[in-house]
Image 1 (cartoon, rainbow, N blue to C red):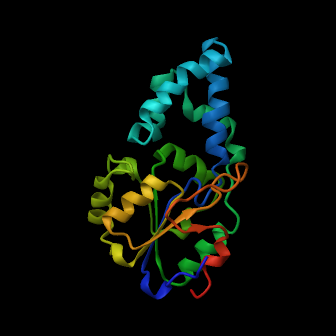
Image 2: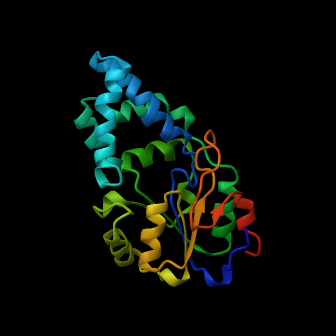
Image 3: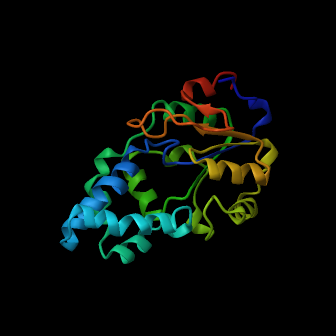
Length: 220
């Protein structure tokens, strides 16, 4: 991909899961580990667990509660936090994400994490991967009450951190979120080519995509 116009960028907004961290942990947890443990804990077959969980997942996708561990713990009558601890060894940084973070921080850019992850999920990941020192702020959409897909998230972010969308770069692996950022006026947008290291590259539609974080820091 072409190098970024770094002289036109003051603020770097970064997603966490699938962007800085390998999405394999989350995909494995929600698609394999949780359904299996749900079946065991509730004494139903894996097929029955699948039938019960799938409509629930579809109904809440893209909404704030989709990302809320408290919501799913109550809904599924189990401790999602405890189940996540069982697979925490799978939490991993994407290749060279730390090199990229170090470079943009050294270059004096304002670096802010914006994630839809629940605060408990964020804490679990920060225990495993030392990300916090790279960031001015770590913002969960739960702080605002709107997911990043919602235009009101961007209004709340603007009111909170006072950034210039025209001089900001935002990297995320979810296309509806990138479109929401574009509608708000964020000028520099990048998708992620391979958010899950086990699933190969994905189609990022109209967005240019990060394949190698080392490529992004050319010309910084």
